[in-house]
Image 1 (cartoon, rainbow, N blue to C red):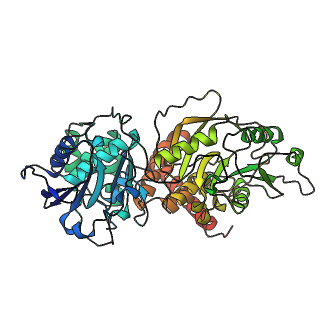
Image 2 (cartoon, rainbow, N blue to C red):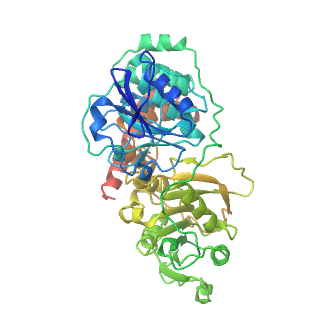
Length: 518
């Protein structure tokens, strides 16, 4: 373990293994020293820490939060980040609105305190920068899509103390956007700042247009060891409670397909303890058609038959019945091989994660992802989650019969410290069976409104709950731009006036649903 202490944009001390003092060039930037240390000590974990936080740096059992080499952690106690909130105008992902009370996935790094393994820095995909915060943000932004697990981690500090952190200038912000996004986002950023913030960032825009983008997009981190020191699961197929898995399946009119799912589960080399099935049928006098549930299965079947339709309601009923340490969110029209659960737990153990979404594609779809990565979504048809995290989560009624219930559930998990890793190595087949699903014509409350909401209130409800103000406004601008060619009003002013009314109508219904008024 090596710790680099810095102050006033310069390294002031480097300590190795708590005792040895390492020499360095006092004239070098912090990032240059960091890279140099990685070259000299390629097998070391390297911390950086602002001098003011030296006594608060938490090094006790640090391998419990920095538990494998393909990670990058940092923590800034302030409510502000290095990049201003206007970065939300150009990025809609879940990595912008960071919950600093928990371990939260984000590429937004800070010079306050952080840690990385030397093997990541030795991949030589980023050059030193005199601005250490900019260097750290660029490093994480580049490497995160390539499999580096990046987090805001409050465990880095023994206690939370405030500090005035450096803030990026407008020129730095625009350069960052030029470096990591397509050039069109520069103009969107300029436009949004002009309209919503009343800022004319003409000089940063012009300066950045001539800024040469230097970014290595071919980042290969595959050779870096990933072997988590966390002990989450036991892979032996015995009575160890850590192996207990409940499978959650809502179903609607897919008798034959559900039977095949149960057969696949019965063949698992790591058997689930219980399969929770919530069967829906909207006909009031109907009875269950799942007669094969009375057969002998190698797991307990907990079957609930209801007349109320809706996947959100069905999944919430199933969630209330989970008793095992892990829950597998499944669908009633998927197929998978017998090693699915065992292999999934192998990767859970390897990466030390509490949530995993498995590749689940249709027959002719091709998996484009080649590496595990931190995912902004959540798959309700193909995910494993440690059950302790679902106790405070639910599928919200504002997304019933609409969109966003899965991503919303994923955001609830993130906000209590449960990251979601997408795993392309294990594959399931999603049949997308033609029966089941929404077997009736659902009419939302706004169906007969003279002014139809745009976007769907279910989509806007998600944005209102989980996005920053700038992200919401950026989404609004993009919606207006993209939808223009798909509608009949060609006068721009008339179009904006019409869309504003539709946006307000969507806001009205989204808020009513979130307040349980409809």
